[in-house]
Image 1 (cartoon, rainbow, N blue to C red):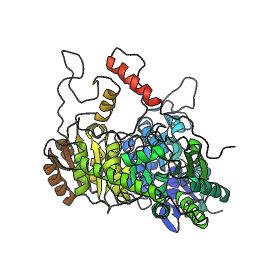
Image 2 (cartoon, rainbow, N blue to C red):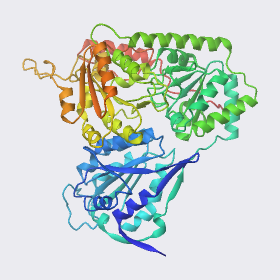
Image 3 (cartoon, rainbow, N blue to C red):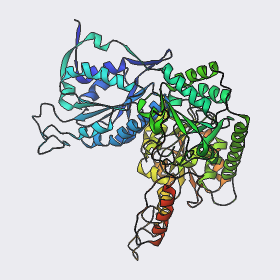
Length: 629
């Protein structure tokens, strides 16, 4: 057998550069680069291997390991999970910095490859710098914290273990059900050890991404449920976008007159102005979708995991006869809420279901229901226009969204993550691009936004990218502006300055609590609390110091002018929009279960508890199964 003598790190680089993913005949390199920060744990191992062969894997020097993982997540999301980036760190704090990103990738079912360094496998220099010691678990490592956060974890204690571990890792990265964070822990001494590798190990390898069809028997049962329903509703999730099922969804909705409601991950599956798109559903939902969901007698959940925001903490669907059909590649998700499981790729599942319904002569919904859907959609569109219309006074966040939506093409990619922006964008942002609404809300990770702008710009250099971020999230992680400037990338950051964590501040007061610890304020020497004046921060000057071009705006006219100038410029552009933190977008019959204390010294909390108990009466912890015995 022909062999090549390489270090473990050299073999890893060679192997990764030869892996390809394919779906529907389209082929891409699976791992398209490595992000990271070098330390003693891998600068002499993986670092040397990458430096020797920059033609195989491009290296990107990020400023923070967690941000590097966020960048890889955004890259993979924009690539519809057909490609990703690897992220490397040194031993200890560099590795633990990646834990939040690992959890975000796994929760969102997005493929990222993490390569943290680890202690010496030979254990002779123990304890090395940055090594975690445990008195009874001698082989414990900081990297063990990745185990519950990843979909695949292995520690490479001998070079030849890569021969088995790497194919398993690639399988998980390309599996639509199992994908998430894949962690290969690399002891620093093993990275530098050499081995005689079989040459065939480095041959190009193709990983075909599955597109499984539904079982015929399950299809027939789903057809029966749909034909029996009078008020069906589709809930579109991220699986629609990852399987490129947008056209199949549109054909299905149009053929049978079934409205489509959106989740955070599914927004954009249909254009906002599509006649059967009734907008977002659930806790952050709009009026049309929530009204229709309340009376729906059948919910076709396509590619969604039916989290608490979609179900409004299980209060959204009030019809006692409602049944669920889950089209999902993961049985775990397809079975939720007692659903009939159509275990299938979203596109394959919708296409097969449509074919069987047409063959069965299903005419679709009745005219009265179609007219009701049209009326509710029209009312909701009018409300969105009202909320986003520019005014004369201080800016509201809704007006900022409206101005940005008018300035930037509906083909642009808007990026956001945590705080109040995701809920407001879900309701108010209009898009025609299936990849144009990019939200990390499965884990709601503060600090994701700027790093995600970098990831989307790397994935699609021609895309027009608008990052929308609150000042609190920006302060948490903004350093990848430097990386984007160094790489010569272009995107706009629209920073909402509202004096702190206003999303949770609003939630805090809604449960009866007084304002406490959420706004960006000085400590008051008289009260001892953080209720003094607002701490001033010059966000524009801060971003400019990292190489961004900057603008400030306080009115709708100023904001529009600034965004139009920024849109024409190149490089990283940051526009600061000062908003009234109390001008909030209302809730539209959506509810989120946030427990209120049963007893409190604050009478306002006691009153909020009464309202909470009343709201909980609408919860349905158990739904009737779609197939009763």
